[in-house]
Length: 542
Image (tube, rainbow, N blue to C red; front, side, top):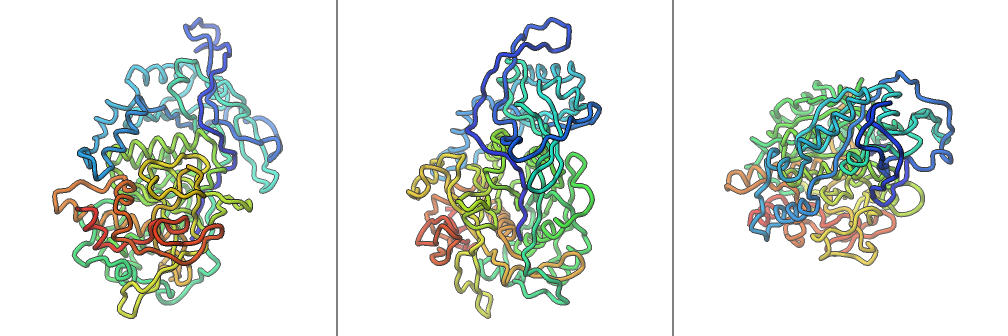
């Protein structure tokens, strides 16, 4: 299953650059702030080369934006997350509550008030101020947004796809004192386009479709029948909906007795049911296959960069400890500020003990599809566990037999993030000092894929979109064991997974994803490999 968030635009090095521009909070009203600063990286690159200008956005068109603020004491936050996620630290597992995070690292109430007062003075409606005081929603007409952010909103037509969209022509600006707090204004363009592509091998079947069953997945990864995910919560980030009747059919066929998933709509939800329905039902059913008693909440957000940030933030606001993510885009297809905004949410989640598992992509080592090497975001984020793909083979008794790297599994080096400290022990020369992807892997090969019931029929579905929930399910099983032992949740898992140094993993040593080949130990195709649930949980619990 390939499901990627297509965001066109080039990534540059993150920065905040001040630009002196005369401005005032309200026209004709003297204000103490006489200069403005630009939020660099918050404008699509190459518009004139990749699109045709077609006009101006109607002045009365209403648009919603999500304004991200940089964490207070950001370096101290990095240090805190490193300690709280490191099994060798005395601070391991001592996560912050939402209130504690806001007090230590969120912007102050006075700073939030300053931003809100400014937005309201421009005629904008201020919406939710999210937990942590690092994300503020607002809305207004195009004319009001142009005034508030000192830019022009124009309409464009993509020369390759023919798709029409709007975008800000220049980087947004804000009064200098406020701009020093802001890292991104999501929603000033709608070039983002969700794209869902099912593998060509997906065809309807009268029976379970030939894909792996819950018994085969659990047997292959040595999941004990003692642990079912009971009492645990898992979140799914989705940009489409699902039909409960399909989930019920799957659960009934395999006698899983899983709780009915809960839906939380963000910013009005994802709209009418689309072809991404298969994606959502794949995610839910894989979680039910491995952790059948876990409570699943499906966060459905709109197809926009503002909707994406808000949906991630809603998950952090919920406090759900484990999240599976099957949507993403090549790093080069995102703006710098968009990556900064999403990264800040993940970092806040890590401080609060939340773990995110993201599919590494289905295009092998060339995620951008431009003939080079590139990786998928958010799998490449330093606060996310990137999940690659394998082809799993099980015995007739459903035990692990062998595993090879899946050719479509995303992997390689980030072009944005430097290598984090917990990954330096396995640093490869090909990584060039940058973040290496993936961290781990699981079954993703579409043939055989995973047995799924969707849109009224059985099929076999694959892709790293199946591998990510396979790992999120393991995290829920681990958290169940940790709770019974009086230990903390796994939270942001990477430091602990790398400390395990391969213990509890099936080391995948054959196969390739294009530019990279599997090898002993960590590699660019499958990371550390797939999990042996019993032995990995034992290792992590100490």
